[in-house]
Length: 265
Image (cartoon, rainbow, N blue to C red; front, side):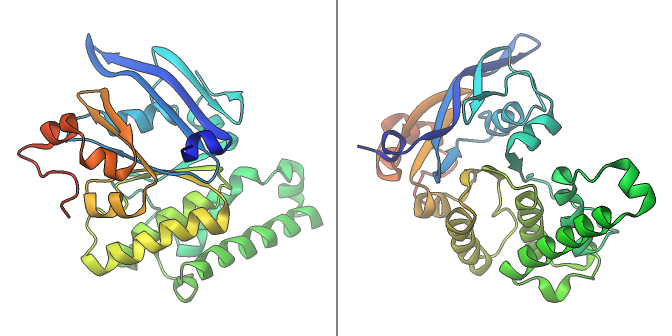
C-alpha cells in the first residue's frame, strides 16, 4: 500500500485541463496529495508545471475537471479565496516586498487571517493591539525556526538570494496553509544551500504538518526528498510513482533525452 492510499487525501485534483488559443497547455491532470505528503512535479521546460500551479491557486481557471481541498470545492475560486482555504505558494521569481523589513514581509502574509475589523483598527482597540502582537509573535517565531530572527528588521532587499528564497517560504507558511506549493525553490542556490533546503523542506512538512508539492529541475533534490513524483510532458502526465519507478520509466527517460536524465544532479 502506498502513502496515497494509506493516508487521507487532502488535495484532490481530478482531470483538470486548460487551453490557450486552441493549444492544450494541460490535459486531464490528476493529483491525489495526502495529508503530510511530500510530492514532486517534474518535466522538461514547457511541460506545463507552472501552469498546473496557476490552476491550483486560481491564477488560471481550469476549463475542465475538479479541485477539492479537504472535501471543499476550489474549482472557480479566486486566488485570495484559495489562499484563505489553505493553499500557499512560492514563485519561481521571488516576489517579496523589497522595501519592507523581513519581519513586515511575514506580518503582511499573516494578516490574511486577522479579522479584528475596520472599527477596531481605526480606534486602535485592545482587540486590535492583541491581534497585532499575536501577528508579530508568530512572525518572529517563524523567522527563528529558519534562523532569520537576527535579520528581522533589515530590508528584505538586503538579504542574500538564498535567504530571500527562505523568506518567501516563511511568508507562505505565515498564511497557515495545509498545502504548500514550492515553485523551483532550489533555483539559483549553490550545492550547500540546496542541501540545507532539502532538510528545511522535510522539517517544514514535519513541524508544520503541511503537505508539500514542489516543482524542481534539480533531480538530485527531487529524488532525495519526494515520496512520489508526477511527470508532465507537453501538458500530459506520462508517469506517476516513487522516485525509483520514475527514474526507470522509459517514457520519462525519452522525455528528458538531451536535457539530462532524471537522477542526474
